[in-house]
Amino acid sequence: MITTLTAMRADIGSIGGHLKPSARVVAAVEDFLSEHKGEPVIDYALVTTGDDITLLCSHTGGCNHADVHELMWQAFANGAETAIDEGLYGAGQDLFKEGISGVAKGLGPAVAEMEITERANEAFLLFSLDKCLPGALNLPFYLAFADPMHCPGLILSPRMKKGFRFEIMDVLYKAFDRRITLEAPEDMYNIAALLRDEERFAIRTVYSRTTDEQALALSTTRLHHIAGFILGKDDPVAIVRVQDAFPATGEILAPFAMGPYVSGSLRGSHYGPLMPMRLNSAVSFFDGPPAVSCAAFCVSRGRLTPALDVFDHPVWDQVRERLSEKAMEIRRQGFFGNAMKPFEALSYGGIVQILQELDERFVLEKPDNS
Ligand code: 13P
Ligand code: MG
Ligand code: MG
Image 1 (tube, helix red, strand yellow):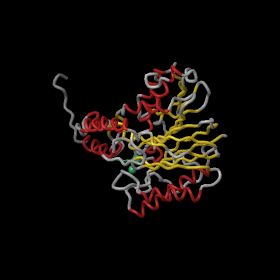
Image 2: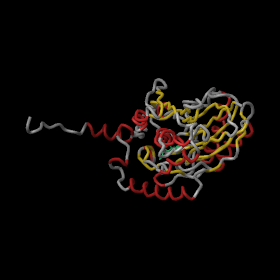
Image 3: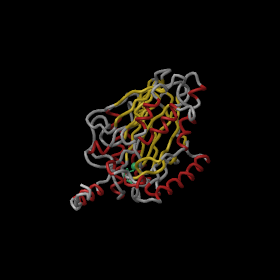
Image 4: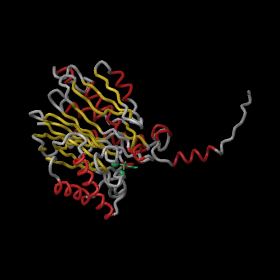
């Protein structure tokens, strides 16, 4: 059977700042979906990560299906009404067009979707991240799909030996979708040269070179470009198929133990370690640390199993402890140097204004030796 998996993430309001949506808001989104879902939607799931709600719909409508996107958007809009009623912070934050007709891509919520021919055992992962950019996933997914130190399947499985094809987006390019396709292992260094820059480049899709099947879809729209003003709310979602010709679940998860410093964090203006969190966790310290959650599923004829929370395990408690220390360490230097994003990348306008004002107060002096 050909099934489409559509993941949509939106921040429609949260308690006490940018921390976590309320139970009433989550219920309002879920109730709307269960009441209104019908053809072509077969099943759905909902998880939260920090202040974001991620919906997953399985359906038969294909990618960019207007009815499916509208249904999901309306579910969020229904939740946003409750958020306004409760006085939640940032109520309706990511729904900044008055309703939609047609696809939701580029209108606020982050969307990742793929149409798949279901395998007999169709296992996949839904990643949802808060307080970071799509490029935060560059390193873990590069290591999972291209590095045998993290993904031994690349040398152990004949089904993976040919490697994977990466489609990488230039997310700073505004006029069009500017993308490049590169193949691992031949293009390893080229892929690394692009992916090192999380502000500018992000993986959009990954395909198996053995079966030509799509392994991964990631949301790559940057909201502050869509909005036409500075927002910096680009928290991404991703769908990753696992096992068989794709990396095993453990191979996809292993690189997340590293917790690299990523761009985002408080006011979208700092660096913090990407911390693997349990599903439905709040963020806290310095509005973070940047959080990644992951729900594992199987799907059969469009029907989803319950979500399994893959970061709910003692190993990840240890990882979280280590990364908490990493988060504290970078915070010790406050606004200075590499703790805060460089001037050109800052999401919030205040410092730009300060520097403009100060610019007029600089004086020019001839050097003595001239
Ligand atoms: P979100 O992008 O998750 O809404 O967070 C914004 C922010 O400024 C947190 O400090
Ligand atoms: Mg928010
Ligand atoms: Mg968020």
